[in-house]
Image (cartoon, rainbow, N blue to C red; front, side, top):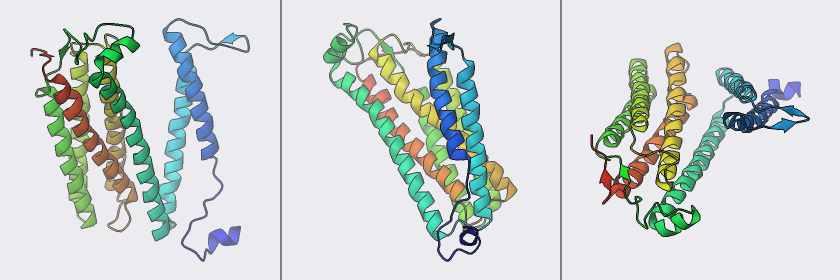
Length: 293
């Protein structure tokens, strides 16, 4: 085994024994159980396990810390392997396949939210029947409900994300052509635009004329846009890590999969937002009461 690692005669990389898959599984399990605990805690309920009530927020945060530490340590090992020359052409190709599969799984998450939205919007009468309410009034958006003006803050956020797509592309092209200054400047602008998008959406949520629990419109709106907002935050952190690595000089024109994966993820977030803006903001506001601003 030692000889196979030291002198491989193939393009594949035999990974050294690692504790991170096991520790990550433990962290995910603790986080999942902790999520139930924190929900019971927030509604002043009980969650008895072996005679002890564990309805408290601490288990969730302990699991989250384990998961975050595992991510940091595991990805650090991956970066180290790349610097040691283990990421051959075949390994790099398979890393890209893995990222493509991950983005495909994320697409299916959004398909679920869009499915819920269109099921409720195209068949509002049935949605009201399932929810045991007449609040929809048989129309969509629900009768008497004010909705957000799609050509105010949502349009502003659309422009922000489209601009961020151009800046991350600029950074990518700069990296390919060995322009380190352009790479760093492009990433700084992209991270700044991502943070600006999040702040605008937070402001929009705080001033929305409807709430999550008011109707199925609010539920589908906040689940779809909120899930996307969470991805923007993750993508911003992803790009921020790439910015730190770019400043350290980790990326080269020939080896920069970490940045490439972040750029793919960010473009995916951009495309999803265009669908959200077109369907949930523009199409769904047709004929509805628009909030005054």
